Image 1: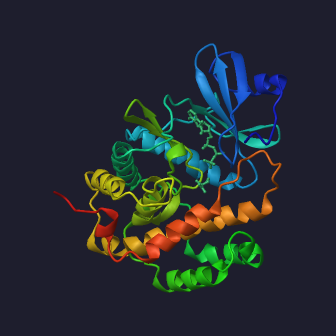
Image 2: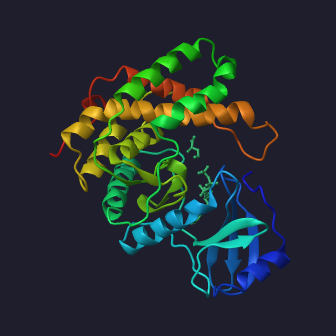
Length: 323
Ligand SMILES: Nc1ncnc2c1ncn2[C@@H]1O[C@H](COP(=O)(O)OP(=O)(O)OP(=O)(O)O)[C@@H](O)[C@H]1O
Ligand SMILES: N[C@@H](CCO)C(=O)O
C-alpha cells in the first residue's frame, strides 16, 4: 500500500488552516500508486487528494509538475487542479514531507482497456502535447536514453535471477538504442507515464489524466510509444493491433505525426519498453517483499521489448494515417 508517511488528524487539521477548503470530515490512505503517499480527504465542502511527495520526487521539480497541471487545466485539457493556499502557494510541508492538495477527479481507471479507451487516450495525449507547447518551465527527462545504461548496471549482476540468458540481449538493445536514438524529432512536454491507472473514465468518456510526476521535456512521439506499450498489449503478452490503430487514430485527430516520427516509432517503442523494464527490474531486485507496494513484474516489459525488435514499420502497430 502506498502510504509511506502516516499523518495524524491533529497535524492535518493544522495543515488545512492554511487553505480555504472547509473543515476536515475524514481522510484515509489510498492503496494504489508506488511513488508517493496519497490520501482521500473529505471536508464539508468537497473531496480532495492529499499527496505527500516521497524520496524519489525532487522537491525542486514540484513547481514544474503542479504548474503544468494548472497550465493544462487552463487550456481545457482534462486534469485535476492543484489547490492553492490562502497565501497563493501550491506546495506546503506536512509530516516532514513536501505536500500538495489536488482536486478530486471523478471516475475510475480502466482495468480492461478497450480500443475505445485507447482512442480517447490518444486524443488526450495529443491535446496535452499541443496545450503545453507554450508552458514556460522545463524539466529534463531523468529517465531518457542516457540513464538506461547506469540503471542497467545497477541490476545487471542479478538480472539473470529474473530470466536466464537475458543479459546479452539487453546489452545489445542498449548499444542499438544509444546509437540510433533520434535527436531531432518534435519535442515538448510529455507525460511519460500515461498508463491505464493514470487515466480516469466516467462511463466511456475520459474524465481526466493524473500523476504528472514523471512529466518532462522530451520527444513527443516517445510519449506515444510509451502509450503503445502501456495500452495496446493483452494480458497474454500479445499486441492488439486494433488498439494500436485506435490509439494512433485518436492521437492524429489532434496532432499529426510527421514522417520522421513515424519512421522512428519502432525504435521509440523499443526504448520505452526498455525504460519500464529497467525501472521495474531495479525495484524487483531491491524493494523488499514486505514493503508497502505491489512490485510490477519486469518480464512483462521484456516480452514487449522482444516484440518491438521484430517490428519493421509503424503500420505493424496499426497506424494507417489520416483517412
Ligand atoms: N486527483 C485525483 N482524483 C482522484 N483520485 C486520485 C487523484 N490523484 C490520485 N488519485 C488516486 O490515487 C492513486 C495513486 O495516485 P498516483 O498514481 O498519482 O500515485 P503515485 O504514487 O504517483 O503512483 P504511480 O507513479 O505508481 O502511478 C490513483 O490510482 C487514484 O486512485
Ligand atoms: N507506470 C510504471 C510505474 C509507475 O511509474 C510501471 O508500470 O512500471
